Length: 441
Ligand code: NAD
Image 1 (tube, helix red, strand yellow):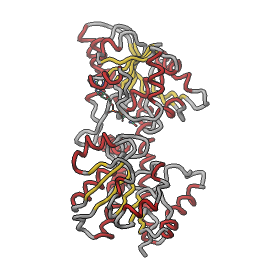
Image 2 (cartoon, protein in one colour; image 1 turned 180 degrees about the vertical axis):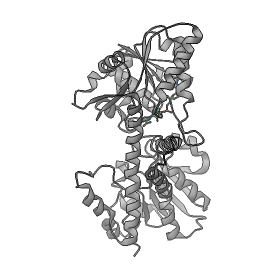
Image 3 (cartoon, helix red, strand yellow; image 1 turned 60 degrees about the vertical axis):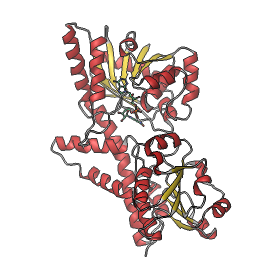
Image 4 (cartoon, rainbow, N blue to C red; image 1 turned 180 degrees about the horizontal axis):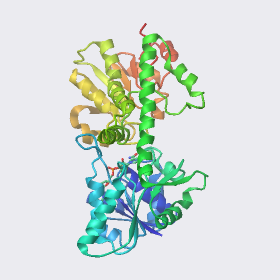
């Protein structure tokens, strides 16, 4: 089979590479010429563990290629995956201009039957807008070419995207014809070896499933953050509470770790977009509105602790910051809590020297000279009044505290991911703040 993937970001590139790995011929299309040039040279523009090896192997086998021409890219394909961005519009709803732009271009150039699949996260009903856009372009050309639309939301996680794609928990596909269902079944057969289901449903339900999944996950995070903050007020320890509730199989122990709020390119925008969709239908999603406001507040929780410790004027204070991307194992800085922390600390006069194992280049692109960039985690804390830990990279879990002691001015740590053990910190004589474990009573 031949497929085309349009958009070579985190989702498109992983999708294209993993399909190529299963033996399918893939053409990836992107409008970004520099990106396509890099990819043709075997360079990967993003950080995603395992992707480099897979891409190299499939490029060597001639199963994956890159172009900026959608017309050429779709020529021989049986199925076209649209995997371009759907950033939030000014009012929080998903901006569909890239998705619908691609749909129109497909309509302008397709010559034979295709299944046109929306892989981007899109509001309910978008696949039918894609269908209408293609039909309109075909009508403009005065041709009648059969095609089907399908919805196939992506559930991969940045940082383990390749693994998630190759061994998915489930694959969700929304279709409206048997012909499209057959094509999707053939495409995904190689990925079902671990026994997880390929779930066919109607297109509305498929589109809704993606938003409901991300919103549920964001809800778990905000719920736990709110509970953590209350733990501090009542003198409880959120670690123990987490274990206590997580061992109930109805609740489960995943995704209930408190922190500095969710970020990234998906949860914030998807929760916002679902709230907007509901508003459009005259339904107020009260739970998700609360999820958003708790998250907004949580991004400042470490800064509040820093202010309580050092006072509101941080002029001349030096902070070491570990972790810049929104989570470990990715260079994605979109909506990262570190950005809010940096902004707020800078406004109070602080200096920040930061380190992230893979997001330094991306951070510098976004933050410029606002902060200093360290060459490693120890370089970041030289002469620091305090260390701030924002993401739980494994290399931050067991630092040499003797080196920290030597390099820092003050032995103070603000831990936004509960990476360290409060008892050990006390033994080492560090002043230690974390989330949901600092009793204020
Ligand atoms: P991204 O911003 O990393 O990549 C989008 C790519 O599309 C860019 O390379 C851009 O140049 C390209 N593009 C834009 N317009 C184009 C056009 N007209 N023709 C060809 N290429 C074009 O985005 P992403 O993170 O991969 O997300 C893509 C979609 O998948 C979004 O809807 C997102 O919500 C969804 N999603 C993302 C993730 C994730 O973890 N990043 C997970 C699941 C779903």
